Amino acid sequence: AIDWHILLVLVKRATEARVEGGWIFGDALRASIVEVEVDRARQGASMPVMTFATYQNHQRATVRTPYVPDLDLAMRHRQQVMDLLANGGSVAELCALQQRILKEVVAARAEERRASSAQRAQRRYFR
Image 1: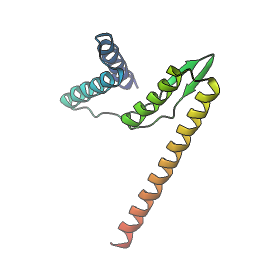
Image 2: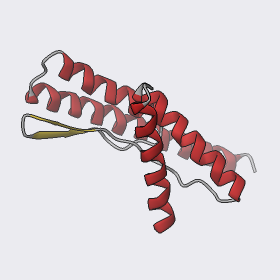
Image 3: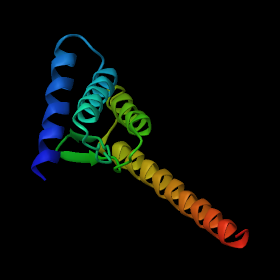
Image 4: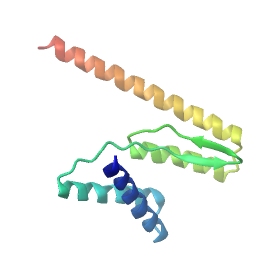
């Protein structure tokens, strides 16, 4: 657990430093994760599976996107939230967006499970 916490702190600090240096947030985060992955590989340590979500406070409400292991997908979710806020979105609109994103993620996970089950069944059949 301590190793995991240290990894997260390293990613956070490196990302913050890059953003302060003028980087775009998504690029800064990606570069920081790659940096930590390379460092861990040099040490012979494995990289834990990371999941990503966006938390955004707006008018005393907190909107959270679902945790996903795909950074690009998480960044698209974040961008949708930020775009809605930039266009003056209400709390109700943010909550509706949150629900749409959640439904998309749940549907994608269900499809992944179905595909995985079908592949396992096919492997058993062709043994």
